[in-house]
Length: 244
Image (cartoon, rainbow, N blue to C red; front, side):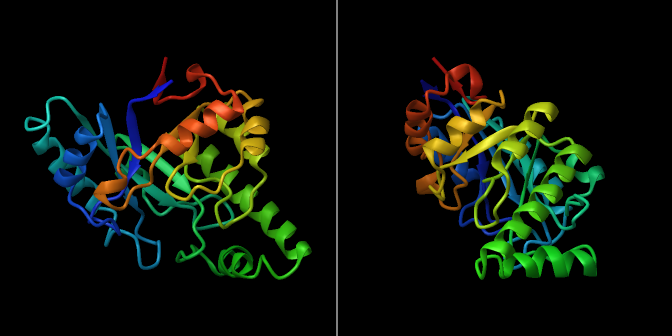
């Protein structure tokens, strides 16, 4: 199996440490054929873009670089944050419809959409490790919020499901399969288990292996994900950035 693209990479528009040009150069050096710049939405505390309009600016910059990198497909998307129990995200539809890609994920440090979400969702997840009962409650709330976001928006990828914020992985995968959303294997955090991927794969969901790179040296660093795919016996046909 060969992985030919990295669809989750951060630039200086959010908390990445490299320009789009530098990320493109790194992608070519790794032998990639495509890369998608997906910076954090504006409500990610300490990490997000200054405003949603930054994504349009990033897309214009990427378009200007295409002539310099004819061997590389450079696209721009967003990694939007779920900011409410009802599945609201922090990238407006008017913006993400102009982009090439939409990733949606749960992040613990976000500015919530309302007081109810602040109490049950944001604060609740800060306390989810205190007791098993609190963890289970957070799992149910997180799953409901993420599933609502997947159904309300045209999402291409669900980012690092289960990282730091527990969710029902199989339920999320089932909804991903229904909505044609890829389930991410994230090599930047290396937290996922083969046994979980085996269970998730049975839903028929498509996978994508992404680096979640914030530095040039980790762009296209996908070998860990490739190893997980092989151990879980997930075929290339079930991975959107893979081929035989």
